[in-house]
Image 1 (cartoon, rainbow, N blue to C red):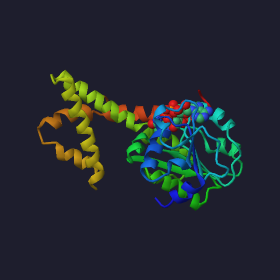
Image 2: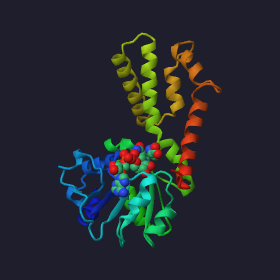
Image 3: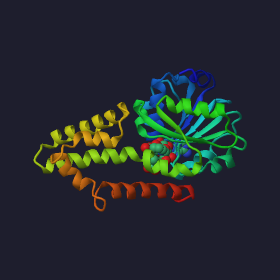
Image 4: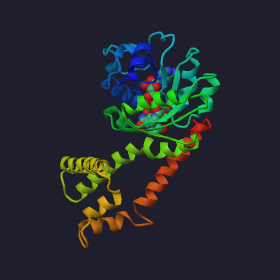
Length: 271
Ligand SMILES: NC(=O)C1=CN([C@@H]2O[C@H](COP(=O)(O)OP(=O)(O)OC[C@H]3O[C@@H](n4cnc5c(N)ncnc54)[C@H](O)[C@@H]3O)[C@@H](O)[C@H]2O)C=CC1
Ligand SMILES: O=C(O)[C@@H]1CCC=N1
């Protein structure tokens, strides 16, 4: 990626290399980010990152191109307190809830881009939503978009207000889908299948359906109808799953609403 040229020259600082920070870093390294250009700050970094040529818990470069904040919102204040003043560095936060205004209070006058990625970024299949502060120029947003585009798709938001709902949908969403796999496998077991077989069938069904859903322009409703023979097995199953009162729609609505609300609480400083 050509945008990595500036980053490879000036450096990228990643604060927090856990599940999300690590997923993005894995994707960036696979896309041409030089390990030696990356300074990772994480007091509990996993051993797997130590022999990759990264600068781990080393002094920060004096003028890094990008500072990526990927610590828990509850740890953000501590992490921010340990950072020096940085000039001309684009600040990118992936933290749920934490508002742009929090970062503006620390990095006065800095361009700040808030991002909500998800962990499929580790294999280049993430989706990230981005929104910048008033200081962020088109070039800053392009840089943030390029960084996240290296690990998946990117959408731009109109307003920071949308970020909690994005978090509740696509940020947390992979967990919902993984649970769908777990639930389908359990359901297969309940119908007499061996656990390993049920898990393989459930995993590949979700993976295949997901791949089909993005490989075609067809609406998901049409793809669903393509599976559903009148009077057949799918129709019998969907009658349960699509029940307006007890089926998936109200359950998913409550799920996304709860996650969105938690994002709002985190934004107000809840622990
Ligand atoms: N895990 C996910 O699917 C997603 C997470 N996020 C956001 O990413 C952020 C990180 O979440 P996870 O990676 O899941 O958490 P995590 O707990 O896996 O990783 C956080 C990392 O930060 C490190 N850390 C703690 N205090 C630190 C400090 N003062 N300085 C430097 N590093 C410090 C920890 O040692 C840990 O490795 C959160 O703000 C979360 O909201 C956003 C989208 C998706
Ligand atoms: O659970 C969380 O708070 C983070 C944000 C989105 C996914 N994981």
